[in-house]
Image 1 (spheres, helix red, strand yellow):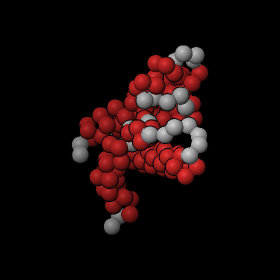
Image 2 (tube, rainbow, N blue to C red):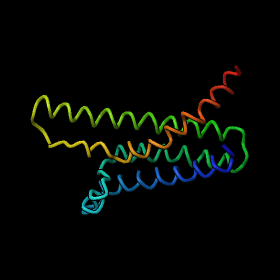
Image 3 (tube, rainbow, N blue to C red):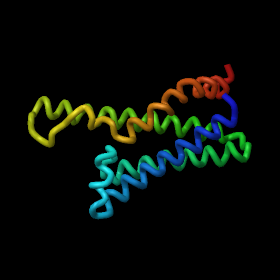
Image 4 (spheres, rainbow, N blue to C red):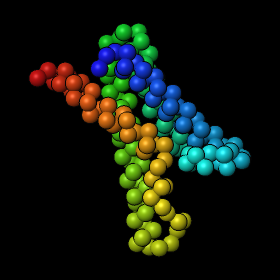
Length: 145
């Protein structure tokens, strides 16, 4: 892939992750904001929003380094994609654990598979695929084999 596509990718996902993270934090802090964000499947989770903001910051830092033609911009991009994939897996496992708990114990809040579609999970799908393709080149260059 070209540097322009990586620059566009880092900027786009930096903005998306940061926007969704701030939305999750603000919906938890502002009264009445949850009614606006819940129909869009954005939970009121300040900790998850903070994680999304951190991943977005890594992507935006990668965008800044790639735009300046710095040599370490690609490393920040790969790190952002790895963090996105890692936290996407964590969100998936946490959602599945809630579903299994509901099936086994039968009490607690109702669960549906649509509850897995939190921004931390679905935002991680494209960076995970990009990590699979671009990350192989990065690891090959890192190892030098």
